[in-house]
Image (cartoon, rainbow, N blue to C red; front, side):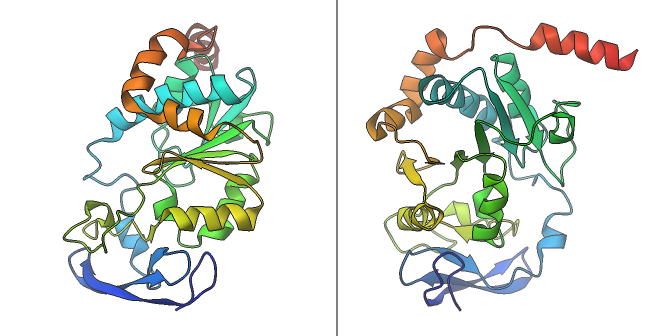
Length: 261
């Protein structure tokens, strides 16, 4: 099999049962170390619910990422511009970011918008944004390079999360992130995988080396980016600079009230 990122050869890494019934092969690239499954024919079944029942960390993750995203925007981007959360799920991050004073919209073709109704991409009057966020998205991409292009059509900068491969050779017994029980994690990245993506897309890569990453045309301080991604630092700084000047809560309330009328 050829790697879906760099087109080098990818050899079989392991086989395991996906959705507890399909014997599936996982391949690892010999060049950028990207791990991909065989053709993921089970995805329709896997996405019978867009948000898996095993994702018990969804609320806390969005709360944590909202703090870090606010700090990163305040530090490196125009905080008064417009932003989009790609594949934004229930819309919880969009609501949190709007509460923090950032004009965020949501894009998601497959999941119901529960928390940010009327702030979808279809409600936005623009199509190009200062920054796109894509949290817990990259590991779901069946064709990463093409789907990253779709995100880049919204913004030249993507702040995203995906857990990077650990140093040891991974398999379902020693790395929980593979999650074959749910069958949705079909693309697993090494740091070299992300570097290759950045090179091929003509972008700069900044990363905390573990989970949170930024692809952008901007040149920023990589140490400062990593600093802002640190949990304790983000928690501390968010008390002082985590919010924008004006929350959208009252404005959104009046907007939605008029919608109901």
